[in-house]
Amino acid sequence: MSKVKCLIAGGAGFIGSHLCETLLAQDLEVICLDNFITGNRKNVEPMINNPLFHLVEGDVTKPLDKTSQSLISGVQFIYHLASPASPGQYQKYPAETLLANSLGTFNLLEIAKANGAKFLYASSSEVYGNPQQHPQRESYWGNVNPIGVRSCYDEGKRFGEAMVMAYVRKDDLDARIVRIFNTYGPRMDKDDGRVVSNFTVQALSGMPITVYGDGSQTRSFCYVDDLVSGFLILMENEKARGEVFNLGNPEEHTILEFAKFIKQLTESSSEIKFTDLPEDDPTRRQPDITRIKQILGWMPKVSLEEGLKQTIAYFRSL
Image 1 (spheres, rainbow, N blue to C red):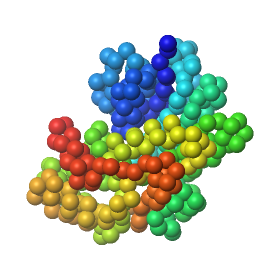
Image 2: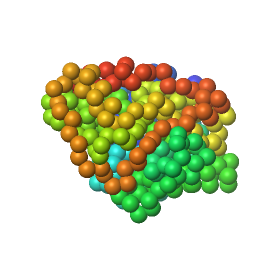
Image 3: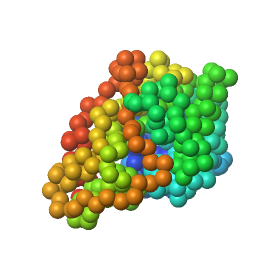
Image 4: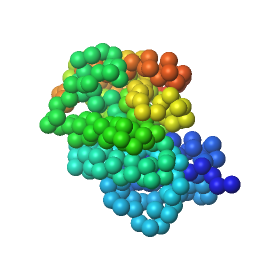
């Protein structure tokens, strides 16, 4: 009997590699598709020798070669995580980010349609922009600057959501959308410019911890294991079909609180240094997870302290 086959686009990335690992642990066949713009081969190296793991170097915006097409034939689950995801990354690759979430989404949806596969689109809390509603519910349409420095990501994700819903309505595709809030954990890129990686690397090296603005802006941080467990529930539960769900930890912290906490956990002597606030940086970010909690029964389990200790240990090992 053939194995259940899963395609993870962006599978060599931070979140994607954790998803690949989890699916392999469930004895599923995993096809990891990545163009390595921001993905890292080291993230998937421990899986290479697993006969159920297949690494395909390819771009979701381009046609796959015949070997890859044959490999994904009969795929039953498609997770679309292929996109630069941190401000530093998507501002470095703006066109690639827009194309991964537009043409890339279209191409993957066509594969899902051809194979009758279930589809999960990894969208983002960035679709809410600098929110005027707090906390953010799925019904909120957002406050996005369509020509701002972050628009390649924000509008790319909004377009991707619209594309998914077009297939849901027109073709009755079994798809769901997840809006991911700030996620952290081992395998984060130390140079990706995100809050957790920035602060941790700075604290461990004794460099000043750079806080943008006065540090009063807020974020809500979800550990990667909790996020992946949410992915699996979303993909498995029929109630998620054709729906959108926030996925994140609703525990809200100011950036300054967070900097002090990381300094404490790393026992760092770093000073906290304030610098200019980036353009279009959201002032508050907190998910309302009522829908996913009530409909699918998902809740985050890993505390911020526990998750940060795991993440700090990873950065120490580099």
